[in-house]
Image (cartoon, rainbow, N blue to C red; front, side, top):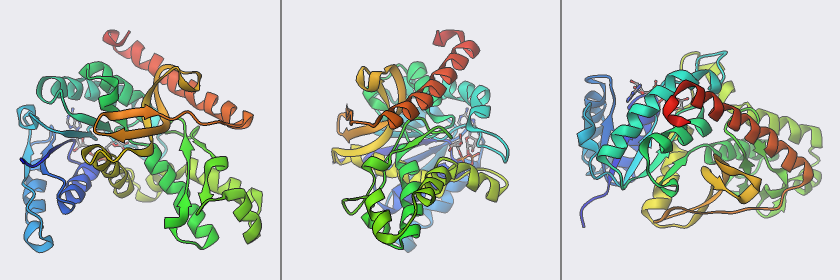
Length: 320
Ligand code: APR
């Protein structure tokens, strides 16, 4: 059987990290694409030379030509501009919308059968726009946010409880912004609801609420510390787990920015929801029971996403 092909559109900080992870895991051959000339080729060469040390045979190439992504099984999109300190993800809208148009057309013309994972921010609007511009089926285009947001929530909870991250199952819904909804009622420490475990460990509700707040602002905290650019290790790791779920037909239930029509009272938008990922792409959206407060928080989050979609439509006639 021929090796799988993974195309990475955008070869910056996340793109390079994705390539390294995918190669180490021998997920397939990798094409690093970017508009910057020389850079993807340079990274591909550098990464290829990890092969003999790490023991992987993945073929890694760099390209500035969309023709080289032809036949890709998975495409992961990070093309665009990351945040600088003081910027919100939404501030990136105008610049990255134009990038999504070019990328969407490149995918449509060269890799229309791929499973496409978008990481570019503002995520929920960009994955929607990328789907519109590419014309791919909704189940083959998904956004990476919830896996990362849940990982941030899980990290902070594990630190607080001084327990293994392996035992924390954290749950985050909604848009990938400061309005995201960490759902405490579905967050468990090896099956024990987080509020119950907090009582056992003598951790106050206020402290858990502080952790929820830190999770919401988790990306911004890293932007502030880095001073130039945004997070890349955990975003790349999160997208790789989604790609593995697709390539391995794992039927994992992962929180992803998926197209939701009908469920959660939503009418055709991309937002973070529990999603089954298997060989069919996003095979199902799981609708869970939410408390009134969680429902209200999800509404605030989805309203914010809807506002961004309106802004996109205002910026590009073809999206109306
Ligand atoms: N086509 C292809 N690549 C592009 C295009 C385009 N039209 N426009 C920009 N790029 C490339 C840049 O040349 C750069 O190499 O996208 C790459 C982005 O890399 P970084 O600037 O290092 O950004 P990164 O940290 O990887 O984040 C990328 O993911 O999490 C989001 O907010 C983040 O939107 C940002 C994206």
